[in-house]
Length: 277
Image (cartoon, rainbow, N blue to C red):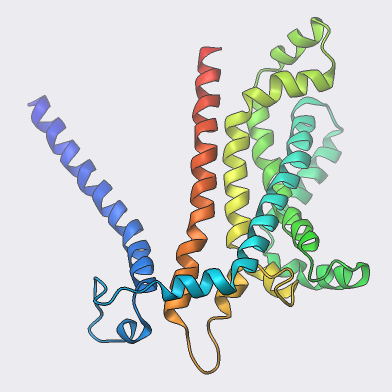
């Protein structure tokens, strides 16, 4: 009886898993196959599930004309993620370990949560005017700073929770052995918080990579424009370049996927190291 119920449960789990995979993968399949079709076949009715005529022309066009957008997106996403982690992880460690006046802590969390909850469009006008006046408009440095503005509260918020899960007794034991506060931070806290840092890095990277708003309003040409802005440019008043748009979308998935797979092994390694300790 128990085995029969278990078999039925596994069947339902398998069905739900297959349904979730289909829901997730079908749009990606449609995107990639659309990129491999000529525009005449894309607009045909009924639509074809499998390309009748294969072509790599759209990929060639995107790689030839839009490599600069890819380079800008990679630079801005990695730069913003790295800067947010450097500042945010140290701030989160300080908030989790040092004592502050209760009113000051309330103000800090109010500011952090308020900035995190605001839509990016709220910051566009002040950032546009500031960047115009100091020469950061239409630069990758300006976009890195803009995305750090919205990523930093998220990193502080998440990493403070991770550091609070690490017992303070470990810090105190290391300091009794003569370690300085910086040595405790780099040699004790950071290795134990590695899974959290990896997870936060992935989320910050994906949020920056996918964002359109800052790239659209804080850049004006290929010197700084990111890939989402380039993809929007395939829609003109005269035509919509469906195949090229699908090719750019397909290629845009690759860097995030590679970054996630690269970071994932550090998540597993960090969790295993914590279990052994």
